[in-house]
Length: 556
Picture 1 (tube, rainbow, N blue to C red):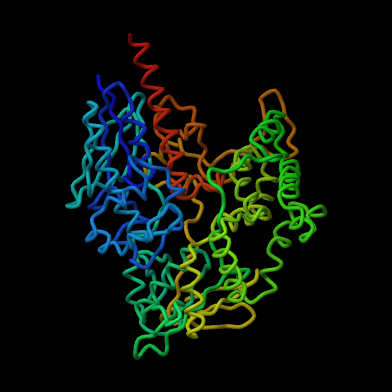
Picture 2: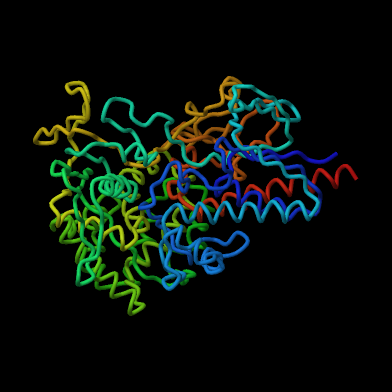
């Protein structure tokens, strides 16, 4: 009997999962459910959600190929298609950044190729657009999905394996009160914001997307005679002014040149982390930090001395890391950092300390799920931010746009500090922000990005009612261990095994795979973007195929 597999979501994680599954020598029946009309693009790259001005923050060299690389796909597009995508053929290269919509077109094209390739290999693959999965129920030997069609009709089907590849979770209704937006998507909603004072919570690429989207509705970016990017407001938009805000009031840094694939680490290596994990201890964060310090000092002694690395702790590393930027005007820092990054790209020079931190975040990530509740809390509160800042750099063009808006008098950055409030109660539209001073904004956009979600947020009621979805378990610090095993506390996210299957004791199918990004962030804080989709899709497809091979061999 042919194994039936369902993939919920046709974005990057679903596509990479399909890519792995069609390698099966055993014919499979694969059904892909997509709530949108055009499968393959994924929410972060979909034209209904994004504006042409929104840039992706992954270069082609970092994009794991599906059937071909992004650059090769672009190079074989006809001139009229590149014109439509607003891509200059002469600038296509492996380190270029492209609009989100370009990546959506690439992903859709690659999905079509995988479907053809899979069918040629003997698999039955059905893609169901405008089919929203609204419920999941585990049975002893199968998993039932309830699917709602566009006309409201509901269908129920059973599968042997189900992959939740639903990606990020964004609200359907963005403007929850007049002038108050809880997400920067869809971009079309932001385009309709009238000229006025606009507050934007966040300073990352999502926030940059928001401010650029609004800015292009009230003016345009253009090059001056010297080739510098400037912003020209449209007539009648004098009132337009945006304020980006965050706790520190820092802008992200420009993407920095580095060697790919990564050069090996010396001290903070996978082997060193695995050795710590082999001790079966869970109070590992200080030992991990010692490896971090050794690697950073060896990579860039001058930088280590500059920030006083030898005396720093988990609790004090972030203040030292951010100190120089906090002492500068954010736009002055942005201009200097951009100039440095552009020159380093020309010279092909890699800043040692930035590169060391970038490489270490993936290695240290191996240990995070094993930390006890105290060290996990310390990591999230004190240590995580430097890695996020280092890998969440943005395209050079994004920094140029912010600088152009600031020079035009249309953009400022506000440091909120730790004690601030954002309220909509006293205004008919927009929001009031209080942080030392009180400012009323005509419109307000929360652009802080995807938040970590937990078991209670699972959108499938029967699955929740079955009690198989629980918060992730974390060892309890200083607990007395008895014969029953370790004392565990439940923290956040979803309790999953190494193949991303929910952990439970009930006599039900364990062939449900949760690789929806928002439910993984608490225990896997660096699971973001295309590279994570590639890794998750590969891991889950391998687990499914291993299970099928085992079942087939037993049956034989």
